[in-house]
Length: 137
Image (cartoon, rainbow, N blue to C red; front, side, top):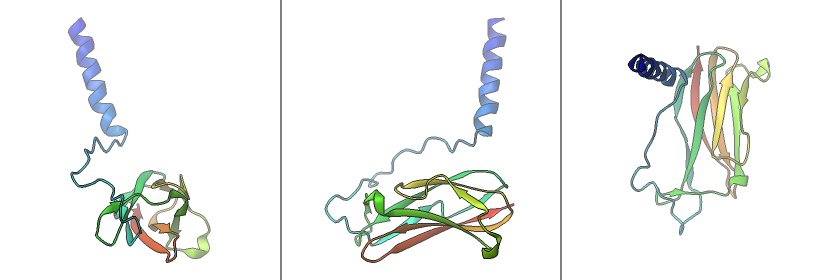
């Protein structure tokens, strides 16, 4: 009887984990440490750069900032802004971001199908932009 309960518990676990949308554990990459000397933002990138989702499905995006030596740096979070754009500008607000400022991450979701862009902006002496393209089916 004990074996049946353990087997059921394992089966439930194996079914539940893929359904939750967990991307799994991502170990830190060697050399992924922040450069603390040259902290001027040269450019930024949004990860993932593209995604395909279903309507009302959520996806987390992260912005990473780099210096002129292509090293990862930690920016002033108060200068980070997030916006999303839909292919139809006249359609109004049809996408949602969990965070629009002060964070390296945001979670995107949309009600309508179509192509969206998730933009991260670093406000400095020169504004820097990076985007991800999202296809909602």
